[in-house]
Image (cartoon, rainbow, N blue to C red; front, side, top):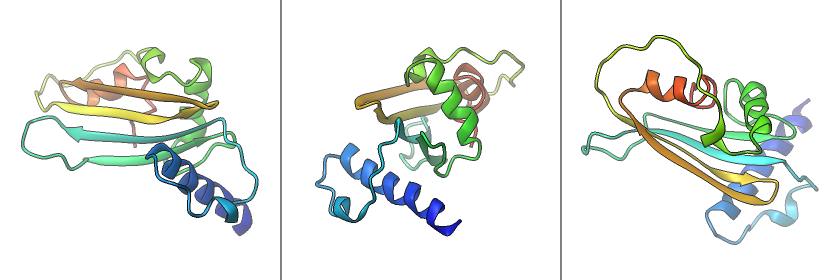
Length: 138
């Protein structure tokens, strides 16, 4: 069981290194692993005072994992839209009308194609609902 958990973490590290444009120093030590998708997800306040994320998570798809609490469900959403977060259907439901703007972003690779999504919403509930209720609910 430890071996199964170690491979996705190592693969995520190698995948994120590739996303950031750095040479993968550990690529030779990572077993053969070709995930369908690798994403870094962030939720950041968009009030002009800070750039520190409120929350951040990694998501691996194929096999599903990473630090995301609902990795399988988030990956299922992404599979239905070929890894394009902007195409995930809205999850209708109530949210408060408070104004506490957040910017969500999903940066990653889906089947070898770079994917980037970023958008600002009036509050975190609106952000989660507008993106299907799962992807940014961590």
